[in-house]
Length: 316
Length: 258
Image 1: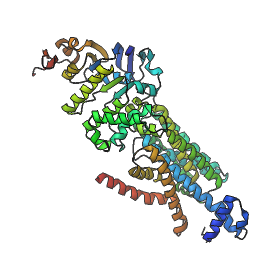
Image 2: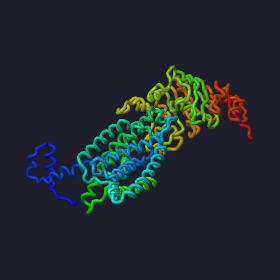
Image 3: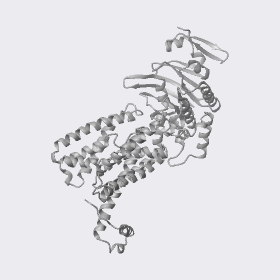
Image 4: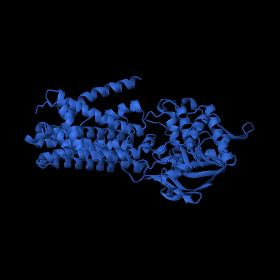
């Protein structure tokens, strides 16, 4: 804990040297600085921006599919699934093995999505199954069950309970290059898929019947985008815990500027999400005296901002 | 062009909504579907548009089963103005009308000049040009319905299905839209199938009437032949007087006060 003061010029030199591969530039620089910048700070900053971007893209997708500007990546219970998976891993003391907690979290998130989709699917009326109401309702039910499950795990966890609680609050401390790469791969794939179906997503907001009559294969597009949005949320939660309000707030605010066209909304939300989360993480890391969990910070600041926007939009 | 239904049935769970319907619709005609609430009118349109899959039977467009076509191909042949026209996101009127060109615009492409011209023209003929930059969720019901109407016209299809498409329009706009539709039926050999509640409207504007009750066809044929005291009593359980009216050159229905 605590922080080291590194001269700005050294930081610039280290980055330039690493990028152009010219190590002469950094011969005179303290080796600790090199390690701090390259192995601690940079992976953390990059992971944080990638997670912010992924959550914002995921939020835009969920708001589009669920026809609800107030949906977020966690509406379908994906976060609760991830948290449940992570809690089990921590409880079984698998946290010593490097990948276990994220892997369990990811599995939990995927399993939750599968169950939610199974509950809201009906083969009888393909146009009506996977409707937003069905999905939201199933998501809330499954989320509630999983939350109770997490409470139970905390109850039986004894001394491990604090580990679970801290994991759930979200943090970018001690993120590594592999963390960044995993999120980045998902983000790039997710972005490509989202942009490919962005115009179809616009039409889905007209409702199931109009969208179908305009040539959108509603079931196919819904499933693909649900899986894409959930994977983005799942990988984000797995790497950094539960960070609320980014996925809800960013697409909502960006929509006020760009309008509802997903071809603009998705990429701009991505950039805004990345910037906002990096800004928040920088505050927790560099400005506050004690580092507080970023999930707590985003909820504490994002919540009131959301209330303000919500109230203002009601008044207009 | 001909739209043919062979032995079509459909059920929601165990509720049979459409029972063994056989009939065909031929282009160059304006058809009206009338029947009591819950008689399966909307379901029939949903089956025709490919939104619902029939439990039994097939629907052919000329000789091709509708369900063998891709969603995009169906959208280029059949347009639907449905009853659900609420939109949750603040798209502009112009954006919504442009969505009618969706089946024609390749992925990642911008609308062509033809698309833009068509959108402009359809907004003009439906009288919503002055609303084009307004947000669609802030319009009145009738204005939004005209916007959805313009969108369906932009699809440039041979078949146009109207599910109570005029329910919120004032009489002036209703008549304008209807004469627009009839013109395209007669001049461009289109096929229009419209659900109506107003029997006089249906009689005035359509070439043929299909009367539906509990998912079955009770009468189908030339409007002036089908509309009678008997059929109305039979389908709606209402006493009426049916007379030829010289002013509109069609049969009109009057209801004696109870």
